Image (cartoon, rainbow, N blue to C red; front, side, top):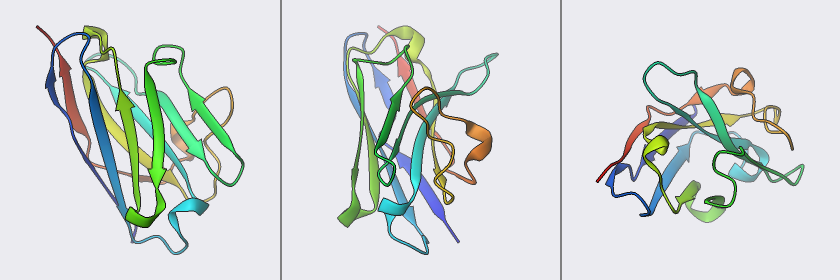
Amino acid sequence: QVQLVESGGGLVQPGGSLTLSCEASGFTLGLDYYAIGWFRQSPGKEREGISCHNKMSKVTYYADSVKGRFTISRDTAKNTVYLRMDSLKPEDTAVYYCASSETGYGCYESTSRSVEYGNWGQGTQVTVSS
C-alpha cells in the first residue's frame, strides 16, 4: 500500500524559504516510475496543482503562481520528493499535499490534474505571515 508523508511546513515570514518533503513507501516499482505532484488548498479555495514531475516522460510543471519561486526535485535513493519554496508570499499560505500517480498520468506540461492522482499524503500547513 502506497503511503505518502509530508513534512517541513511551518510559519515563515514573507520573503522567506521552506523546503517540503514527501517521503514515499509501498511503491511496487521504484519512485522514478511514478508521477509526483504537489498541491495546495487554502480555506474557501479549490485545491490547486502547483507543481509536478514525471521522470519517465521528462515533464516538469509549475503553476504560474509559483513559477520561478518553487522547485520540485526527487531523491530516488531516499524515496523522497521535495518542494523548495523561495520568496514566499502571504498568498502561499495553505495546506500543502503531495500525491502520486501510478499510471504516470496527471502531470502534464500545462497542468497537473488532481483527479488522476491515486494516492495522497495527509498534508502539511504552510503559513506565511509577519
